[in-house]
Image 1 (cartoon, rainbow, N blue to C red):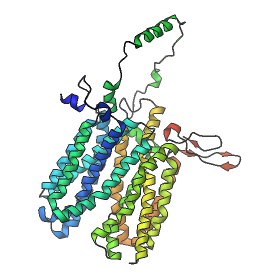
Image 2 (spheres, rainbow, N blue to C red):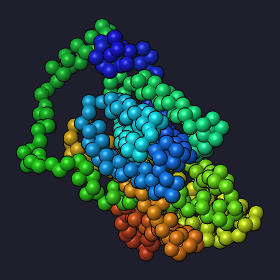
Image 3 (cartoon, rainbow, N blue to C red):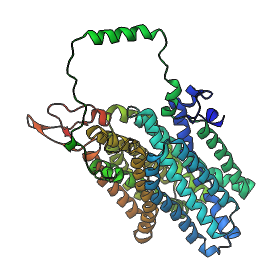
Image 4 (spheres, rainbow, N blue to C red):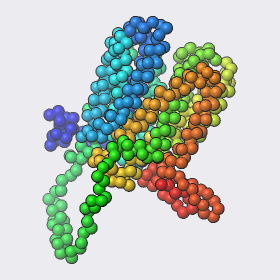
Length: 496
């Protein structure tokens, strides 16, 4: 009965609402909700962690900042280390939904530990489990989306996921702070458990496309029999023609095949995309450790006012689905390149904000909005580029990743590099501001964005090679199937 209700494929009878539960939009909504839940539960407890450390775990006030940093590092470290293993396991699993459910149960357990924990060991373990859950959600969830939508609309799909992530980053800390101030410690976790219940309901209702095909494929009826017999007669009366051999020559079958994750890492195109994702995460999170403190010291703002400065940085991410749509139609190369290049000037110009005046406050918000727009424009095409690389490798060498493919392992690598960026960013920002000041920090971030735009231009969508015709050099984003762009034309750049 449960197999029939849940649609696990163990029942001959179609589960209820099969077409709805296996629809593309429902799967996208479920994965987006999973990503939102992961980020939301990460962010909503941020305002209460210092309280939990001092009053519940007995940490001295002078050591609270030290342990807050450790808890952040534990989460990022668990995400970084667990992602490759989770990706490998997800590609070996018979379906994607089971790992998603395991990830949610892990997240629920982590939330319970953080809620009731009264010792530093329990709190650290809770954050460790949160990082493990994030590794599962991101690797399996994004791979499930690729299985569902394919390559055609993957950019727009990744844009929707990026929107859910940005919304959670925006809402969770603000909501956590307000609820904690008005209703207390446990009220924050009541909201967290409510979001988990909604998420687990969607994941239980989800039916993967490949599972739904068992019931959605219509069997041939009696009316199809005459045409089938006529086709058989026509084939039997036709002169015999030699059929092309489908056997693979022994020499073409590799005796040794590298693990998929190593095959992926041998791609310069993928390494460029992963490095760019690391830089994007570094640029975004560099402000986490310095922006509130700089606003407090320059403008005299409280933590609430300083926290609101992240609004202009994150709000441009709401246009992520549109960016993904453009990446599907025109290729990822120039969008990602333009995003980094566009973010560089406002990053450098942040050094101009140095006085407690209204024009300076407006300037700071405007510059942060421009930075956010550039980074969002770069990130979505890079997320889609991971799929494009796997598709290209499969097309060039069918079966190189095995029967189940390597999408989860590819996004596991994305997770690793993104997590590394979230670890580097706060350290970079805090170290440079502490040693050289706000102006030098903004300059270094701007130079990093400019430097990253170069490999993005060269490798995204395939290696860009220039050739002359009539004394004029021109470039075109190639890729066709491999990145949403138009194919190579005469007199334009070659893409390999």
